[in-house]
Image (cartoon, rainbow, N blue to C red; front, side, top):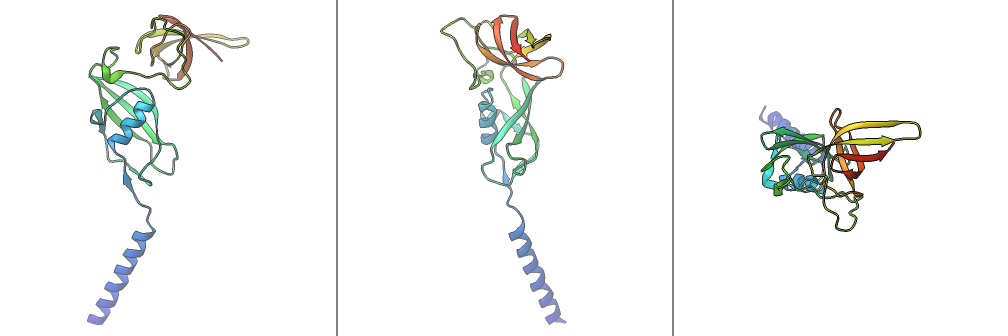
Length: 186
């Protein structure tokens, strides 16, 4: 009987070792990685301002993260939806970011950098502030649409900045005309 139990123990230990070797490695995604991805998307956030709502794992220790959306949740916080560039590396997840003054243009933690495609012409004064409301005029060959938007970036007349539609949170890149109007193409 003892020989039988020892044999079963060996089989069980060998099976567990094989399963552990075959299972993919799981690496925790850190607040540093998340804050870096959020900052790259245009909203400067320090790791200590990031709160993970649950533990997040990736199949690699250095997943390439991207921001899907950022939504102001009030009380000086924003909820950020994130995912890995490669869906095989991790599942989509949410994090909470703590700001000093959400929507304030003076809060250093809410500084929004220009996207790589944005242009700044000379040293014109900034007329469109991050968080300000405006109207985006989209023009096509036979269509003219006006959409209420909120600016995600600041800009001067002629700059191309990112804005978000108030109704469906769709993101657009538009050219600043003045403090309350932008234009874009369909």
